[in-house]
Image (cartoon, rainbow, N blue to C red; front, top):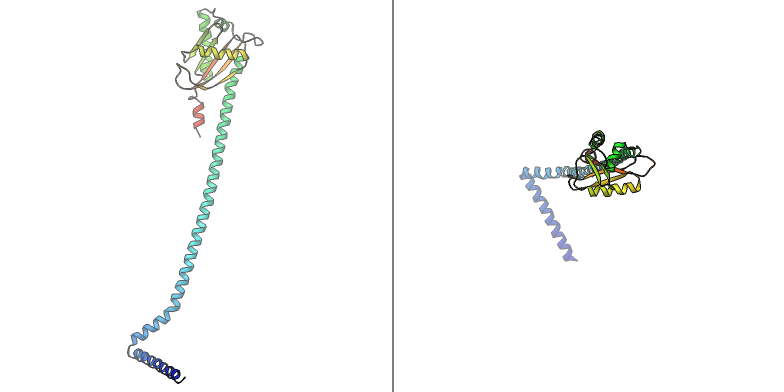
Length: 239
């Protein structure tokens, strides 16, 4: 116990001496005293700066988060609007193509509902003279130019007769086969996009049965060729 008390007294005495020495140094060196005082005064400022910096960083992160959410919402809204516009344009194009196809079928139905002229019948039967053939060709030219078809082909597969206005093909057998199908059904047929020898590029067409008596059986057919580059392709490609 005496030894512990002695050690305590020695430690206390050493502390006192160190304190006295420190203040003597401060008395002899004012700069050190001022520095110590400045450090003690700056401590609250440093803590405030740390708090302000932390608040700034939190605010910056909040602004970035809000900006990102706004950007994502705007992007989603723009994508939805773009998809809706594309869907509306696509539906508009579909409606326009359907309307165009109905118009072409209407042309064929008008021709099918009319009794063909006697001279056209003579051509189909293979007994027309040069004047009758020329008048029939003039009639076909009017149909082609007025209604905007690439070619008009008058066909009778039974007599192997065919006469062409416009682009001529080198495959009459193909037209004979198409005309035979339409004459058997008695109804107008729409000819989808295809290619034929002698005609450059793909095309469409109508096949119309012809009668001298609208209540009688078909005696031939008229084929109306359609060039898709004239109207159909530009319609689909345009916005």
